[in-house]
Length: 384
Image (cartoon, rainbow, N blue to C red; front, side):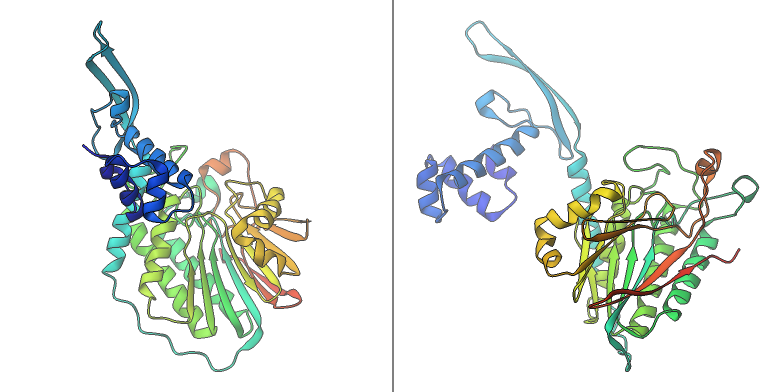
């Protein structure tokens, strides 16, 4: 076996090839034009660490590798009196990171087969200083709520019609802004796979319909929403944030939209795996996080200190941070930012009902000026 089997990049392969030929770190750095010998040393250490997780570390008498998709949990090696290894017991567990990466690869391959839509005709009259933000959070498509228990019925068909009508009402209520931003702020899907459980906590959920149908409806309604926005706004920005209920679902949904509209120059999909998202409109910074990782009073610190957002934060006069997760409304102003927690259009489920939790259902559409910040807002309420 060779460490080459555990390299992920061409650069790693070149370093390991020279390392296995007996080259020292300094010589490897000279041969490959690396800045310092530490770069070569760190690369070898990283590859060795990855190999060890699979059971291959000959310097430690580990040569019994585990199958793909698993990682080593522990190794017990038995030695003879003269110090020779005579037996080994390797304990392994499923490698969740490898399984997650494999799933993403399958999603990417599936999306490659999608035939992109032709570009939508650009609207003629727009107001160039404005951006209209449509926020949908904690929609929980696939949730089942029995009205006699929760006070309001909610199922897949109700959710589908509610989403499409709400998007239409939100678009109709805005001016002809230059930019229309559709923000799915997380938990658009009620669960994240074949089992009706939360992805991390494994809490049992009450779901309606099969996951395949949930996927089909999610793709259909989000496609319809994007097309409606392209007919109204000159530019459209799509955010599909990770939620605690749909960690994987948020990924395939945004990648589906990105592939479907690959030929549409007026659509920008913010496609990053970092669960914090940002967009600058003139001197206005718009930031998004579902709210499951960081509490809303700490979000200004996260966005202002994060290296990938720091430049845009510095160029902004005011920042607006949007979060969800708690299904209720709340606003804080601190550290040069206004942080808002958004309500949900979805009905409360059995869990919330039994805990006595209650909040008014709705969705916000907010219009921002490039210089002045927020200039108008409307709340859409479901028609019961």
